[in-house]
Image (tube, rainbow, N blue to C red):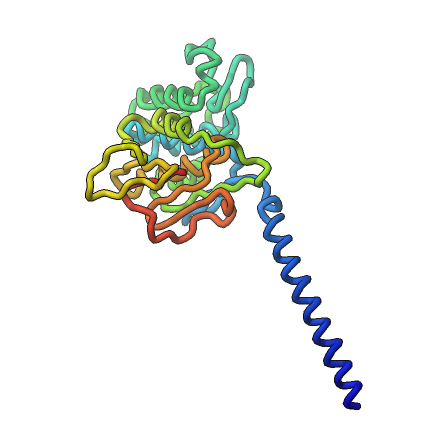
Length: 291
């Protein structure tokens, strides 16, 4: 019996060792393939609900709020823009459409909106939409579909109304009213070469020159921390602006090869994008660190 017990103990020990090795190997394999399993996407989540977006939709949605910030427009203006863009293009920068319509808002060059090339630029097309919207008398007090139709002059203006809940959700997130509410992720094979300088230029084109950017070569006050090496720090006046900028950076990370965004005690990394925003005690409140 003693010999049998020894053999059984030996077999049990070997089995446990094998299982341990397989478990470690399995975990290592899972850790390697996990980023690929999630694919590429974005998600907006606030108290109003959640909404999936692909990477293009996420970037365009962030641009709409950025342009609203530059023009100092209220959140309601962004809600109207979102509902309109959802109806017209599903927030995609379409190369064409009905007759000569192009872009996110399906604006028509033949109706005086501008050249097709300019209307295919999300910043320009959004700016033109808002320029027309603010000319609508009492647009903030009108029903959403009425205000949108005054701008778009579409065949069926009532169609915009159905997208108001989604418009409110997107505006709540992308204007920064709800912190850390936008996350994006993409698989390692979708990573692109770093183009942070171009990202910063595009960010300031969308948000406007009010945003001041610092980097390790910029002279700053001796009492203020220098941005980490290989990063830029976008100075912000408050939490709402900060989270609008942070959301823009996250949604544009794949395009510009950005790897890290930090703000307001939270951090996002491209390697773990699906996890969203995690606690980061070193993330500043008065700056958005973009790397």
